[in-house]
Length: 239
Image (cartoon, rainbow, N blue to C red; front, side, top):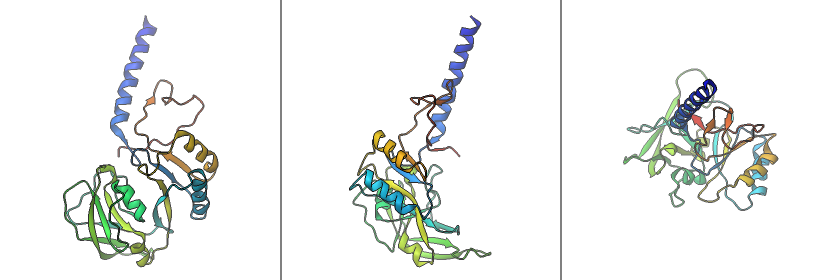
């Protein structure tokens, strides 16, 4: 009788913890997106080539970051990005990345113009970029760059998109930060991800955003995983 009561109590606790986990879960990408990240600048070319071999003909978007850590931030007047944004400090990239963010392949792209990606009804014609190319002490330099607004239906994708050319023109050297397969263009299967894992596990991390999967608190693993299988990243927890 005592064992039964103890088991029921454990189950109740586990259910409560799962509900908390679900509430705290914040995705790392749009549903169905493949992210490949945590590789060095030197590994970027071979990693991209491996993805192209496994997914021939599938377009690859990429976000970029400065080769060396240097201050860079983009801000727009009267625009507050939500806490759950995947890119709360802005994101640098190409036209494929912009269209991934909006979920709309017809989104206009101008390599000289920033884009406020938002769910809100706002008007923006410029963005202020704070930057420090040299890494020297002192306040960053500010520059105003033309901007426009593009709508997204996903609040996690709200951000300020800055084209890579704008950032390079400020003097930054950039490197690929994430390689992204847009789920609108191709939905990566579990088999494709496993094959990519086998190709890339020694050099980088692959992750497909499949939403909250749950966690078996009694067994100490994600539901559906074999007992010996390591957990993949499940997105960011609430901050």
